[in-house]
Image (tube, rainbow, N blue to C red; front, side, top):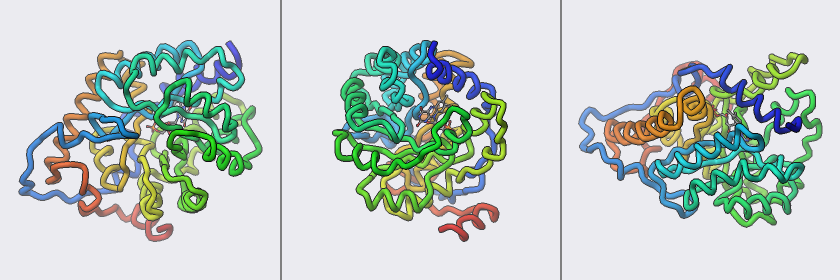
Length: 338
Ligand code: FNR
C-alpha cells in the first residue's frame, strides 16, 4: 500500500477512535422559538428539495470522507448504495490521490456505479491542477466539485504541505471546471474574509465545515510524534462560520459537528441550503452496518419532517425567519465577529 493510501486508512481508524457520540458544540448554544400552535402536519414531502438539478429526499447529505484505498472502496460502495436507496446526495473524499495513483479510481467510481442518477459531489485539494480536476469530474460524472482548504491539517502533518499560495490555482480551477465549485474547509471553519475575497473572485458556493465535530488536528496528531495538540483548539465553530457565510449572502452548506436531526434543522435555520454529515454517518456504517446507516438516514428524514411540524413550517422556504437566540458565550463571539 502506498503512503497516501495508508494515510486514508489511518484517517478511517482515527475518525473512529476519536468519535464521541453527541459531543457538545456550538449548535447546543443556539436555540429556536417554536409556535405552540403550529398549524402544520408531519409530511415527508415538506423536506424534499433539489441539488444541482437533481431531486433529493432531504436537504442533508453524506459529506466528503474517503476514497483511494481498499477499505475506502468498500465504504464508498456502501455509501453509494445507501445514498441511492435513501435518495440523498453524497460527497466523496479527496480524489487528488488519483493524480499520483490513477489505479485507485475504482475506489471512487464504485460510488457512482451504485448511485448512477444521484447527486454526487467530487472533492479535490486546492493545488490539484484544473485539467486533473476536470478529468476527475468527468470520470465520476460528478454534479459538483468541492475544493477543500485544509491548512491546519497540512501543518499538523509532518509530511503535509508548507506552501499555501492556492489562489491562482483556484482561479484556474474556476475557469476550467464545468460543474459548480464548492469551496470547503475540513472542520476548522471558513472565515468571513476568505468567503468575501473568494466571492469577489466569482466563487459562489461554500461549505463552512466548522469546528465542533471531526477534528483533523487531533487525527493528524495521533498519527505522528510531533505533537501539536494546541492546534486542536483553533477552529471556528460551525454556527459562527455559518453566520459569516449568511452575512456575505453566499449560498452555503452547513457542516462540522452535525450530530442529529435538530442540528440539521438548525443548520437550515442559519441559512444553509444543505447540511453535510461526515463522521456520524461513517461510524453508523463501520461500528454497525449498512442497514443500520440506511435506517438512521431514513429516521433522520422522518425526524426532520417532524421538526418542520414542531416549528410550524410546511416546507423549507422560510426556515431562516424562525426566531433564534444564543447562549451568552456564543453571543459574545457573534458580537465580536459579526
Ligand atoms: C473527512 N473530511 C474530508 N473533507 C474533505 O474535504 N476531503 C476529504 O478527503 C476528507 N476526508 C475525511 C475523512 C474522514 C475519515 C472524515 C471523518 C472526514 C472532512 C469532512 O468532510 C468534514 O468537513 C469534517 O469531518 C467535519 O464534519 P463532521 O465529521 O463533524 O460531520
